[in-house]
Every structure is written in structure tokens, then in C-alpha cells.
Length: 319
Image (spheres, helix red, strand yellow):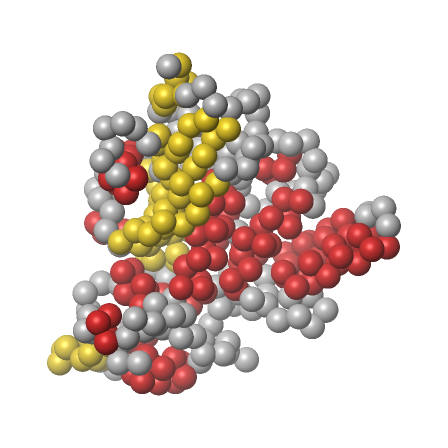
């Protein structure tokens, strides 16, 4: 059995044909920003090999995250298994299988570690934050570059197909913006050679999108986690895993908006939350709102038993 060093500095066993990694997309929300836990000097997600001493996949994942970041995980769910032959890049020839997990937590639960950082996920995907309107880089940079890539196709059918995919993914040509298409957008930018990771395969465009790269295919894994969470908050009450024990409805709304990357109608949002009976009043008031005192609420845990499909359904975006 040989070993080698990963991008995050850990030694891992290598079998004759493949190895299995465990990778965590650990998400928290602070200061109205969705944040992801990264490790190492490079931008990487907490990860490590699945070893014989791990009694389960989840145990192995929790062990690596705690060792690398000092953070104990709460809620986790399996995200996706990545096993594409050329997904890691470089000169490595073995197949690397990565089992990824989505973890939801609160930043104040993490102990200090010099090798970890909480980064806004919009640092890595600046085109995804539409809370202040369509980012200028979408219309001024991204759309012209994608249209140039579409027009560079060798035949009409391919040109039309590229144009159609870009329009649907990024909301061009009167298509609406769908926040759940985060992974499709990143993969399209990769295919067009507009992100730094594509340069590793030597198919990069001469001009690259803003946003730092991550090691290996960790930015693709992060995009998968964002897409999963943006979809899931609409039908399961997982957003409360990111909330403190008590909160105002405005604080809850801001967390949902931070995750979705878009604004929601305040009154419609509150009406939906109350209709679904997701929260209950604590009888207390928050005095530090900067205005009138606001009621404090808590998540009503009984809803999990009452409705398996309870969630924070998003109303239409604010016009």
C-alpha cells in the first residue's frame, strides 16, 4: 500500500485502482452572508480518506472535519458521489472517488484553528448574488464572453445549442433567473474555459471570470451543495439548522435571502411561514433591532412529525 499527499497536506492511502475521499460542504450564515468552511493555504473543503478505522462514512467525515478545523458537525446529509475519471487533473492516473456531504451549522460553534476560514460562497461565485439586482459582471463581462464562445462553435447546430444553454442558465433573452441552476452555470463556465479550473485542462479562455479557484474540483462540489440547499429550503425546514435558538422573522428572512441569492416579498414570506406553522412565539421581544422591538420566535419542532414535507417556501422575488 503506497501513500501520497493531498492538496490539504494530509497523507492518504492509495489502492491499486482507486481511493475514496470524504468531502464536506460545511455551511453557516453570518452577517447576512452564506459562508463555507475552507481549509489549508489553498481554497479547499475539509476532506480526508475513508479509512478502515472509521465505523461509518459519516463518522469518517466528522472526524476529518473536526481534526482539520476544530469544528464539530451537527446536521449532515449525503450530497453526491463524484467519480469522473479526469476530475482531479494533473498527472495522477488513479481514479479518485469522492463522497460529498452537506453540513449545516452555526459559526459560533467552531473553535479556533489557524488552518480554517469561513469564506462567503459569493467570493467563489460572484455571479450568484442577485440580492441587489443583476450583478454588473453578468451583463458587462459574462454575457459577451459566453456569446463569443457560442459563436465560436464550428456549426450552426452547436452555436444554437450553446446559446440556448447559456440563456437558460443565466437568464438571458427573457429567460428568468433560476437560483437552483448554480451547478449548471459553473459547469457551463468551465466548458467555455472561463474559470481558472479549466486552465488545468488547458482549455481555458484568454479571459477568466472573477472568483478564486479551489483545489481539484472542490468548486464544482461547492456549487452542487449550493444548488441542493437552495432547492431544499423550499420544501424542508433545514434553514432552521442555521438559525440561533430564538430569532426575529426579519432575521429568518435575511438568512433565506442570503442562501437563495435573491430578495423575497416581506409580507408574503411571513404569511407563508405562519401558514406552515413553522415557528412559534417565545413571548419575548428583541430590543436590538435598531427600531421598534420585534417579536422573538423559535422553530416549532413538532412540525417535523406533523408534515414530512414542511419547508420554507419562497414567495416570488421582489420587483
